[in-house]
Length: 356
Image (tube, rainbow, N blue to C red; front, side, top):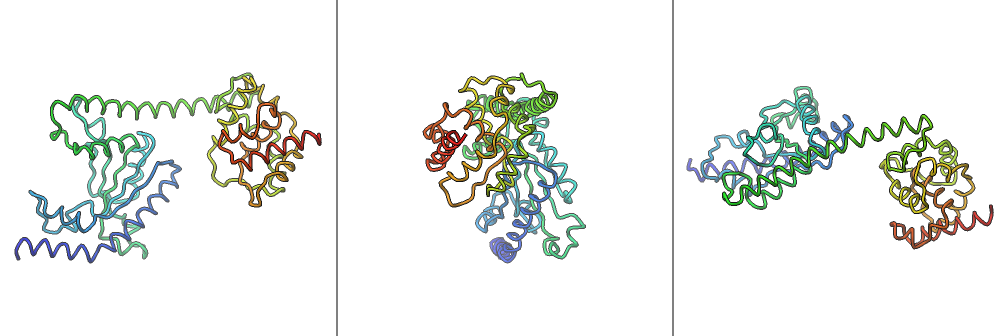
């Protein structure tokens, strides 16, 4: 059989299995999300893809490449990329991948520790995997038992480097003109430094939160206003249970999943505008809140649809009512509120003030 006929035969075989690979990619996406969620990891994104017929053909026709069985020999017909926020999570997720799949190949030379001091390149952990034995025997996975896939794990920063270097067509250092290499060395170093610093910042933030928990719990409330300190103050605010109960009775809905930093910046900004400088100042301002204020908010919400709120938002509403001289419809709109919602809250504050 001529080489041209052989290539055509390989392409025909791949076309026949393309739907199978697409289904494998889809199921792999769901599986990885479930596994990572089960380990309580927060990642940026998971991307999956299947090599197109055009890309498959180009791979077969690439100079210096020869495949006797490309469906087995080409490792990335089906691929997945897991993009993390932090560099140390790459290693942690790699460990999970090692435990969940059979590893056919792994390439870790794209990691910083493996690069020579005078080299640069995009950083990533690469694995060629197939389903583990237990999962291959499950009915819903059996049809994928002979397939393999590539999994790449990298940070957002590493992904940015990869995308830009790919656009410049400088994925390989040997292809870079010598006049540009020094600049790329410098940029690569900055990217690695950024990844390291983000890990340190994350860890420092965790320490600040831990310290805030201890200080607030022990009643040391003279600590300065900061987002971690405000968050802990709200978590330990003794009135929250009563306020949340009343909000639920009125019809407010609480987010199932909400960032713990929801509204914290708004609370900080408003508190500082009123010259509140410590957690003690803040808590004294919202001391002994009345659930009746939430009734006023509900009656003036200017919307037939239910509100979805968080505990932080309840705290913010009380702070708004106590610092009414510092807020207005325009103030709230400048902070992202719609005009109708902002007007409703201002009306509620005014109504409650008259009632009180």
